[in-house]
Length: 272
Image 1 (cartoon, one colour):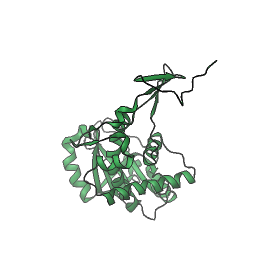
Image 2 (image 1 turned 90 degrees about the vertical axis):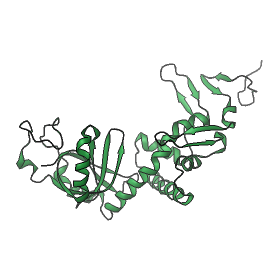
Image 3 (image 1 turned 30 degrees about the vertical axis):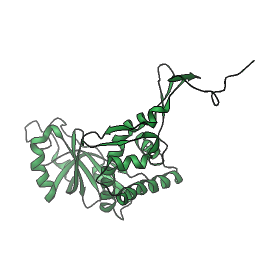
Image 4 (image 1 turned 90 degrees about the horizontal axis):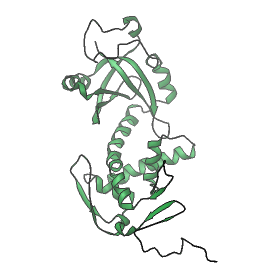
């Protein structure tokens, strides 16, 4: 009687299946490929099997110097190390980012319906990770801005100082941030302690929203405008760049990866 040993088997077909796992011929990873960085028009060429995730990060962000790229990479490595040592729970997105930084990107996809596990090539991994590699540079700018704006402010400090903003107030949600209308329903008394003066420091657009990272007397604040209100964004940008008082309807506090830097996320707001 003989037994099949996949560890020593010679695979000649394009794919083979064993224990419900589909593996692929890795020759595609040894060929030169051209990749396009979504949204930027930038392309680069590489042989997938020869580049690391850090290389992918550099190739996706050609405007960064090697030194700048290393600074960003080490910034997140250190945060994830501290988060791991302190056993902080991470969101699914941050887990994926950690895998990317520590070169542990998943090369297996599991079909939940058939139960089949498909091993993906390095070429396919790179195609999927380009967006994350491009996003990382922007996220670094956001995170370091928050580091500066919330310097010496603990999570406990912000919980205390932002307490008036953290419970939901009555507000007619379908009215624009900027509209004045008879249908505009809110209790002025309830908003006496919900006014927050914010001044923009860094802004960016992502998907359907335009975001502002602002300074305030309680630390870093993020506020956004849905791009469906684009006629108002130019005017509002001028106001928030000079500093503007907003009425906070709903908000929450989020922290960075190692839970040391807090930021108030203002979800719903309006100005008078």
